[in-house]
Image 1 (cartoon, one colour):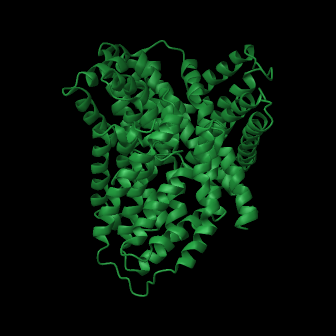
Image 2 (tube, rainbow, N blue to C red):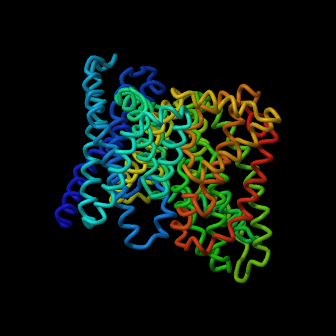
Image 3 (cartoon, one colour):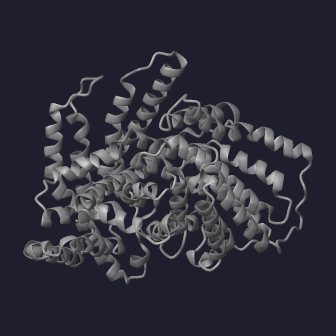
Length: 607
């Protein structure tokens, strides 16, 4: 049975990978064609956005399938890592059953939703919307099969434990419904704190934990048809703004492959590498520049660390210290455009993405200065033996080589600010530019790596977009229950007015960033809290910068922050080696955050 299920899983992966890769290429081609036609030939193509939207939902769902097949859905693994092998196997059985139950319960409603969409035709292409909406049931079927095949690979005893857990929960929900209704909104604590929290702790992927909690709440305590959940998921995943997610992920992988990231790092190293602590400054500067291109923190760290860590270790730097600085710089650069978090926050709250792009640069610079001070103090005993100052000619040479790479962040930002392309379309300009630079300038473009990069792009994007979709459904359920109004009233009534509201928001989003990561936390709570921030007189761009940086601290803070473990994996360093060394850096980031929160001009002075 194990061999049969493993072969089926491999077959499913091969079936999904090719169309997912084609969809990534198609999205790039369609959007870039639209930019060229509109700006280059002044002949806008009315169908490009429509076709991109149709393909995007398919990319999101097939990417979610790939992420599940590759084990790349975002989940909390701190608890399961501490279990015994037997306990870990049972937890994996619970996870597989949880995923399968969510998908199988959702599937009939997803089919009905797709069938109802037949009566809607797209205005430009005159295509029945069912062809787009069918992505949801097709993706649900493929993910359910994947989850069940993984369950078959476990022992029957472990599977029986998982079945028993959900049988007990189902019986309790069925017979306890009347009692739960009498609790009023306190039942939200049971479903969205206790049950969802238990799922997250046992390592159920965050997107599926959101979805299960929402379905359980609506099915047990309301008469709401579950097609509403499907429609909210569709709404959450289909925003054309979010198409920037896969495109910027691919761009981040592309600049690493073409050597553009290394060219930037080499220039910074020639400029500052000869001073004590200079390579730490180079790391911070490289993260600042690269974050302006890739939009993905994992891609940023993967581009910078391999180029700098060997030389920093040669100079005597502790590997735990290096990873600590890398992780803290990831938190520092969360607001540097075109961060995926900035794009997400703009899409779910209605804040101008151009304003967010403009407002994010100075707050990140404030945190970079704070981190540079800590890095200088911690590197005061760095060995400089054998380190020579490069000649002006060498510095100039590395600068000339890096110019095409250094120009890319400015090209991206200028294209958005000047109205040449939208925040979604601008990534395609960066992709085409990077391909040409790799082929014609850096002469580094291994074609064999393109297909794996397309697969990785689809999988990471699917993992992110599924969270956004299920979190949108969850936010709708919380709003219908009246929770959003109560939360807004409670936070708006905090003592101290805007200062008290900001302080509570920082604390809340540090915790949320640690537990939920940035994107799901923003999708879930952004629409609820931004109106309250405006009501107490806080500028929405200023508030966005503060909550994003607060989430960054939580995301990269051990022991729960997923970003911290990503930094350790990229640096090939044990998490234990950096656990104690990272706190001074995180305190520096927190101090910078307090400055940003206290001085609104840093966020809105250039709007």
